[in-house]
Length: 119
Length: 340
Image (tube, rainbow over all chains, first blue to last red; front, side, top):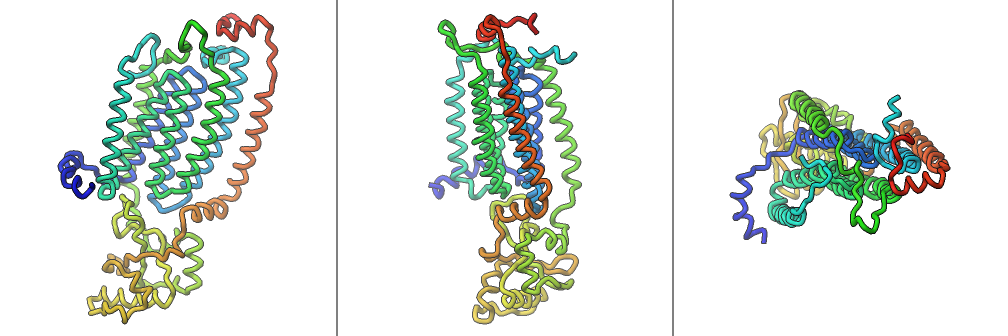
């Protein structure tokens, strides 16, 4: 199948040439994911989704770490991502316990229901 | 602007799903047909899926779908990790994130979501349906993105290329296992005309050219290695070398795959395959780095996890005694602002 379709696809692939993927590509993806996390954290009012967006930011950071680790052929980046995962797990446990507590108190997941915390 | 708003109906969701499935199928077909020739294709597929799913995480009005899209984003990120030769982190990510953390999220979403009543088929809470300051926040987010990518486009080209790393730096980055085997073989004292043999690595590696795609120094049996040295030096000097299989030890013969490259500093680089038995697996390297390089951080991570678990238990078992009326009000979601 690939033998017959390969030549046919060549013009298709020539239109959209895929440049060699470099470190820069991975870093841009990670920055985009981080920014999406920030946008979500700022716009969403549901506390659970806000914490999901912080996890998105963790994802972006982890991708950058692993990309740099691959660039330098160094495994420290991966080890760092392990610690990021650890912190993400701890953060998820604590944040979700807080969310459950707040939901029981107010009956709402709206972050703005707690606006009086601004003092 | 795809941020959720109340009252917007999406009749074209079905069509979008069908179109997405079609596009996905097309991409998959492309990947299968042209993938081996174009390793970059998988990067674009995974990046597209990861970012698209991340976009849906922040735009979907229902938290449960947000969480499911987040799992999709995690899986695509795991694919990117796989492309980056981080196999251990790929599966750790899937198991820990998609398997453990997201399940916790789903549990809490189930615990803390208003149940649909009889008359309303779907209950979309106001705080899910209406975004907060969407324009300003999106502007801020894209500003962050612009700043990040701007800095990246300036900073990344200034990074020292791995190509410029010396043989010593390559030695320093050796996995412990390989380094020890190297020392045992008495091959560590190489002089300026000595030969550094690099592993070609996986063919899918994309941002290293053939010369710089080093992973570990060559570790063959010492006799074969020395024979390889002699052979490659002779070849680099332009002498006639015997390509006869009888003249070379079988190991060295198997190792010579490319022509040696003479670098500017006079060292000779030979691309050579690595014996499978000595190739440090990703998981071994990560384990050595984790336990050997960061033991204190590892212990602290354990302590943090323990403390977080205790904290979560303490938080979650705190009772809040509501009056019956308040409970009713809370259950119907009509608890007034005045209470706050």
